[in-house]
Image 1 (cartoon, rainbow, N blue to C red):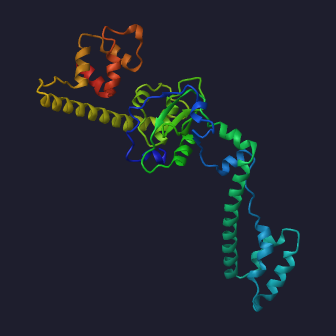
Image 2: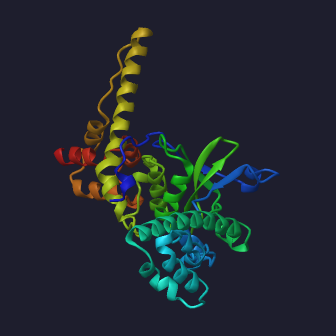
Image 3: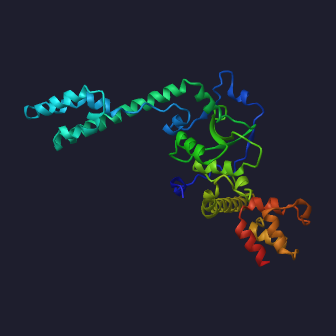
Length: 334
């Protein structure tokens, strides 16, 4: 399992979220184009390699030619210094292959430490320079355009506590298919957008919410296509073992809170106590007249409107309940 899937404290903020239609993205972007900001993942060395923009490599041979003599300057090392100086001027690679034969073990350790430090400093500067060069190229804009919204809707998302937007965008880029993360200034919120279309991409959107540390919206979790595809099977265990149970607990908490509030208001207004039953028990009661229980179980997974029994509201009611396993258990016991 991916390490970030093992997190504790999944955010519940998006459970009741629905998609928001966008009439015109340019209207949201505004005149300056800053109303919608695409949160880009980090520019990695692998990405630079992909676009033939890799940073310059550290040249150890050149560094040795320039720095080896400084490690052999004492009187007792004068002969070694002379040899090093001679071969430092040699255009072939003898020095690079044989420099350790010129020095003592202590001197070799010093050279290797200095060379490692020089390489680290070089690599840091070279990567930054390569990134700057990439951002000035046409390839950068081709890459960046791949994260722009392609469909006229978005799914609002609040990033989980202590999760920064760049990390979320990096995870989405790696694990959430045709989605990306944006910031929409008008609503002061991050959002998940689709960068492609043409099929049911519910798994992609669910994966993006998971990458943001959130329990995906119930409307997605309770309607995922049976075929995950795209490697999303890695999220299946998490969804079944953790996220749907969290959704169930959230819905149960909401139901309990609603019952308590109804009773409180009834007492305050001196009204009769409301008759509130457990929604799962109510669902089971509604199904009692039907003998073919297995048909109903199949319909709850893949309902066909043409086969609906008289109570056509059962599926919608079931979605509101949000507890597949308990509902099926209740059906089995009727």
